[in-house]
Length: 93
Image 1 (cartoon, helix red, strand yellow):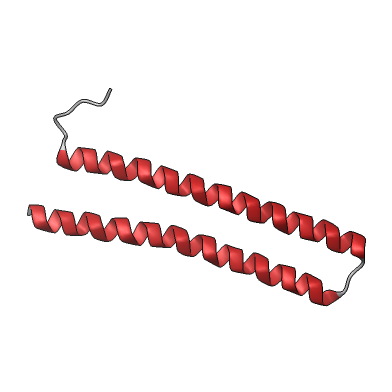
Image 2: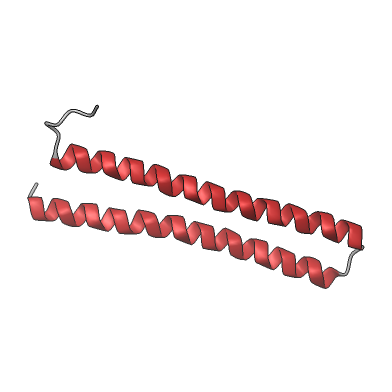
């Protein structure tokens, strides 16, 4: 495989994989926002509303953590693929 083509494929895959992670995060966050707005419009009791609001905030916080972990693991895999592609003779310590 040509080196130039290989670089183009790696750049393309890197861009699209990261965009999919960001798109997933934004999509799920939008769903949480819609659910929260629906909760406000329903006019349910304050106690139940507070409980549901806390649950949505917990899921939103977990979404941030999970997205960070996915991006971190993506970085690890990208570094490994880069190492295998460009410096396979160098040992990992």
